[in-house]
Image (cartoon, rainbow, N blue to C red; front, side):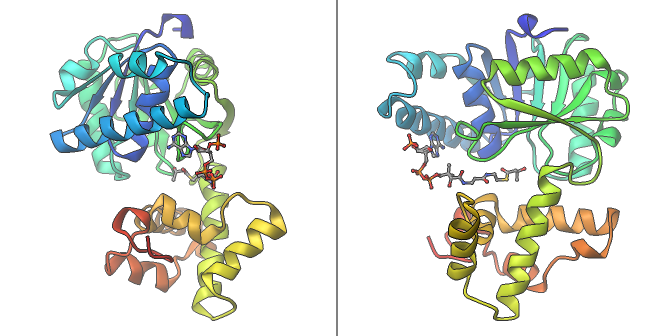
Length: 285
Ligand code: 3HC
């Protein structure tokens, strides 16, 4: 399958990432079905897509009528079969649990058309193991998007051991169609982006733990000293402390001790201080 044949996309999971992915697909002229198990999560996703499109419209980044066209291209459903039955591309963005992803791909294998590319937006889990759950592993690939999806220019394409050349080519074409730059990485724990991202974040959290400087000053160091758009602690609040802890725990198991999660991060997650989404992380919102 090459990109011109992608007309319909199914996005599974309507959280922050699923909503952003659905938005950029619809803005690129594709028909989009978003599926989530919870109707209220679907409503929230449509709301956030509307707001983001409004922002882009008010800044002149999308033309008049583009917001309505994108919203009209999106339908929501709780029914997996309905969502994926006509999809040329499925992008899974369910919570970062390998058992859940594997179960989802098993269902997809039954329900999605034979030609469909089956992509996972996982930020660190093994795409090779996910591909092992289906009878067409060559069609499985990682398409790793970044938050906020409508703004961030990268898609990290993760090639599982089984991914075939045609699927890699299709992934590259899809990224270009969505207006993103792509990089291709092997399926190693954390890929390129999450591995580097959590390494910096974990060190910054250890520096907070040992009182080197305040979160504000550590973030300012990286923003002004290294021109990062956000400091590592602000970014951890944006991504979610729980998400970053899960990535660190996975990399600790798979790669080794340099990825041991700082105790402060684990305590914060236990206390429900997950970052922006709960109103408190390293900062209060
Ligand atoms: N929809 C549409 N537009 C948006 C938006 C959204 N959701 N969020 C921000 N924008 C736009 C703003 O309107 C603004 O547009 P302008 O340049 O035309 O004025 C522009 O983006 C910048 O936004 P702001 O002025 O509000 O704020 P900033 O200049 O501080 O930028 C930011 C915000 C884009 C988030 C920037 O701080 C940034 O790039 N931060 C780093 C984000 C990052 O590293 N993300 C990756 C996280 S890791 C990840 O996602 C992987 C996952 O697997 C965990």
